[in-house]
Length: 371
Image (cartoon, rainbow, N blue to C red; front, side, top):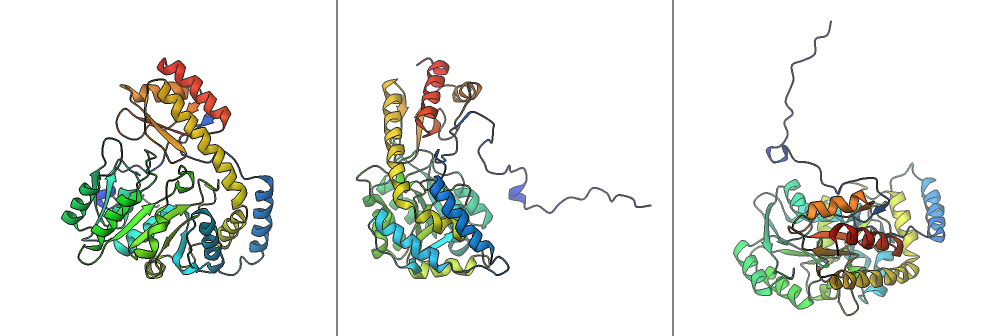
């Protein structure tokens, strides 16, 4: 007779004990506006192209994929040439399973024990988790009251901490705030003075949604070999389910990421999906224009009702202030509208949806908040 062994403790790392996995609530609601998804599914033309290319890739799934995905990197360079007007070589591009994995590669390569990653809060809540998972020290400075970044504060903080990685989300999540290139340049100069070196990562996951006249940090790459600019196909391309993220940087920085990536980390199917979608970039970019307009109209509507709203260059809007933001969040959910309870205390974040979804949000908010 087998006797069950006594209960055995798992040797979980101390800093992981009691930690809940990251993720927004996945709740069933008629209007889901909480995770900044593109509300428009891929068109039938895009779906057909993806299906054809995936079928072709499937015929060779007994073989490992191109581990350096050179064709995809060429396509990404061609896309950014049009989208941001920046000339890049394929060797300056890197891709992975979502920009989350791109960020993890960066921390694996340039973080680690005895090193520090720095950002400025409020910002993306996954950053400290990347640091934790790579045994990198984590420090969050503060943004100003309008969610911008004071260049003098940034310069002084970098000089004091001597981090090896600085993470700047622009447009920032959860606030939507984009950083002026002058501020990014100050950070780059301060990072260049760190003994031993410091990589500056500008996270442009929402970069395609920036307002007219808001530049991309891609414009700074030529003069700054310690800069990396990350993007994703989850938002603008409506490919959240495909998990494709990428970055642009100097070839030497990209080569460092090749050292830490897992073998064949980007599947042949993922590469096929991404390349098929990139062929439809012009049509997708036209669609983004309507989302920008919907966002700007929503910002104006919220402000007209006396709410404080952060300027947004993203596909979401942070608004407040509420004495009981959870009560507002719950009231919206009770009416079928799921948004995100995130950001500084008193604030809520809503993703930009279709006109029908936005109308449902407005009606629910008026009813719940008495606007």
